Length: 372
Image (cartoon, rainbow, N blue to C red; front, side, top):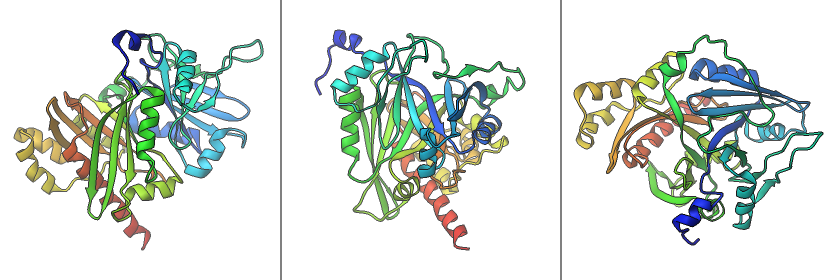
C-alpha cells in the first residue's frame, strides 16, 4: 500500500477512525449490566428495545459498552451467543463521514457487512458496517471531530440518578487502550494486511511469545489516528498447543480475547476494583524479586506492585504498568486488562510473557479443578 502524502491523508475519510463504542452480545442483558455497574463502576446511560432485542449502554470514563440480548432468533445476537457465549461482536468506529469511509474501505478491499441506508419516513438511518476478524464487525458512526461520546443508533438516553457519582472516578478507568484478538494459525499475516490495506491501519509492533512448551505470534496494527489498536495473536504450530488454541476451541473461531482499559494509576484502579469484587491474576513473588534489576523503582512503589500483582516494564519512551483480570466467562475465553502508561508506547515486551504465564497458571489451575 502506498504511503499517503500529508495533504492526501488529511482528506482521506479513513484517517480519523477511532473507537466509538464496543458492542457485546450477551445471554442476559440485565445480569451483564449489573456486572459492569457493580464490579467496574460503569453507569447506565442508554437503553434500546425492539421486537428482536434488548440493549443497555453503559459508560465509564471514555469507555462505552453496548450490551445486547436477543429476544428473537432473528437477531444476530442469538446465533452469536449460541456459538461463542457472551463476547465482543462489534467494535464501532467513529468518523466525520461514515458513508465516505465505508465506500473508501470497500474500494481498498474491505468486505461489507451492511450497506448504509438513508433515513426514510418509516425508519431511521441505518449505519454501514464492515467485516473485521471472525464474525466481528465495525459499524461506522458519524461523530464530528471532538464530539463527546453519544449513544448508538436506536438507543435512548437514561438520566443518571446521581447516586454513586464518585465511583467511576475512584476506579479511574479512562478509555480503551487496545483490543487483543486470537486468530487461527495461518491467519495472522492476512489479517494484518486486511487492516493495513482496507482500513489504512499501520503495522507497529510484533512479538514472538514463548510460555513453557507453547508459543504464539503477535502483531499489532493501529489506526492512523493512533486511537484504535488491535493486538492480533495466532498460535505457533511448531510448539505445543496451549491457551490460544483453547480460546479458539472454546470461542469456536477468531474473536476478542481481552479488552485493555487504561488508567492513570493502575495500582489504585486494581485496589478499587478488587474491593468491588473483581479478581485479578496473581504474579509469582519471584517476578518482583527480579523486577528492580530491569526497572528502577522505589521500595514503596515496588511494594505496591507486589501487593496488587501489577507488572511493570519500560521502553525508550517511558514506563507502563499492567495486569489481567481472572476470566469469569463460562468458557474462559474473555477477560480484561488494566494498563497505565507513563509515556511508554509499546506493550511491555518483558511483561507479555509474564502476563501469559499468569494466564497459563490460571488455566492449569482451572483444568485441575475440572478433573476433580
